[in-house]
Image 1 (cartoon, rainbow, N blue to C red):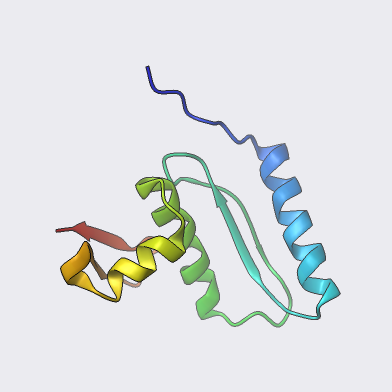
Image 2 (tube, rainbow, N blue to C red):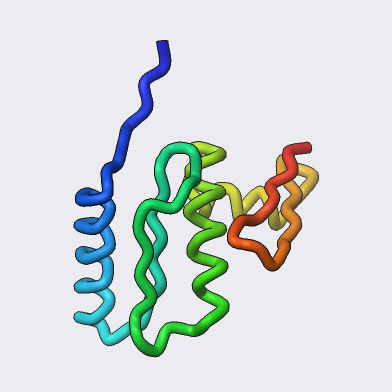
Length: 101
């Protein structure tokens, strides 16, 4: 049987608060999205000064990590070389489409 970790709203908010605090310490404006295991958005924050396109990027990255069960860095490495695994298309929606080859 496969078990899934569950993140509730309170834990998601603690994650957001921690990341925003660390970003403020180094004077960076970030966008943070936290999803459940299915990629559905639980919590979100956009710091003052964060670029607007970062909203879509953060939500897409969180969705992709949740749905693939892999860090977005690993997915990104494969996207750069579609022959090795994945090709990705971007749409101006709140989620990206990941196409497994």
